[in-house]
Length: 166
Image (cartoon, rainbow, N blue to C red; front, side, top):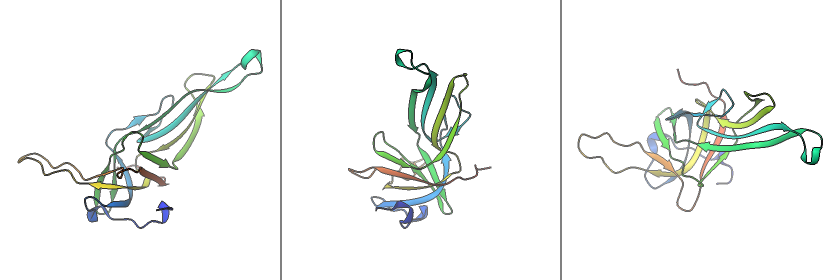
């Protein structure tokens, strides 16, 4: 599946256990991430924080990377037919695209550059459908999940900025 943006999507209501599918929908967070030194909340971010420093050996001052971070929390994708849980596993996820944001940090002399996926954004996700076993009597059923396929990576493609849910 070379071009994920042109791949046929499967509605959430049509997911079958064990199949590798592409779903498209709106991001619904289970837990929000707070990007350090920014006012942004998201489910994924890749951020670089830079500081204004004097160069090595007393050279002229320049922006120098001071810190970097990448985080991805489990989230749900909602389409017109339902929701599915996207379950990223460390080292087995590729995120393509996202919103870009730049700004000054809270402290003078710092700035940040971040790529992120926020609440309500529209994404496409390619992965393996996992259906948890039936729960014991009286317990709620766990949600259907999309996880990395065996020997592969879960791919999340940012499609467009969306409005957060009401």
